[in-house]
Length: 462
Image (cartoon, rainbow, N blue to C red; front, top):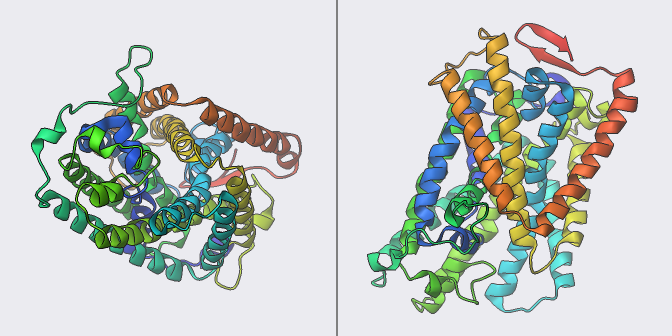
């Protein structure tokens, strides 16, 4: 059992499943958003974004090999910068993570409403969404292996169904390269002289975020810590390959105007296309069940675990009260699970039924990019001050860290251009809560309990 009560029981495959399951969910519901942003060239945008994300993943692999505690951005930026930026960087990444459970639940309920034509009211959707959250909450309190095995089943069923669907579209008899014209088209508007397609591509950082959840599982890993980089790289490459192939197969099915219809404007582009363009009825139902209900459920479980363990780490490092470290008989943190359930319920009540999906998506992209940028700065500073700490040799060395920082900053800039007023309002409220919590730490918490991080040189008070 790891220090603080977490059970050291996860092998590398489990950690890979947790990260890949968190990432791979953006195929059946959010496909309309992607196509609006990058059109027929969505597959190309995914390929380019994968190339951009890999240097960041490599740097995370190096950082995760140094510190043997959960916390990720919290630990890295506290050591590399200071405890204040350590907190705000983790608060930023948690903006993305904490949005997933309520958004996924709403997505699942929206699919049920769409697929079975039950015409549930928004209030009814909320009630059933709350019941789904309770199911995931009780599941998250079980042994971590049970949790990841459930996630793994959902993930691999989703992957298999997505690949089968891709081949079915490719050989449907309706597929044609002529539908790829225009290739680089976007439904967004150009801003500050930046082509709309580039802004749309930058927003595709969200379908890749999730690999950074790996450092939240290091205290429960029973493998050499330097191997965490394999789980990070593997999750990125697995999802990238499937995303590119899947959206390539969709692009040839019809023109952008045929695919982005009023019927598919708010989600389920592929499902609508299979029904309206191909006349299929049974397979869209199977695909929706496997990709929406199971695939999005796998993502929810991955991010639920990450949020809970980040809150646990905040208690461990004296950012939050030690009560956040209390675990149940299955060595699962209790208070972080309760906290996330309450926040998810509040978020569901605050959701706007018509615009929540896109506002949520954009906010996640911007928050992730900002957190990545801060972490890359910390990586550069940590390496400069302690080059002997790393147990994993980073390909490209300092050049890779700098490239990763430039990529993160560019993505943050482009995603900022793509934010709407609702996203900025949501972001302002979220940051305001973070500032209030930070002030409590500065004025009360840290006067009595200092932040202490275990480094390769031993515990350091920061």
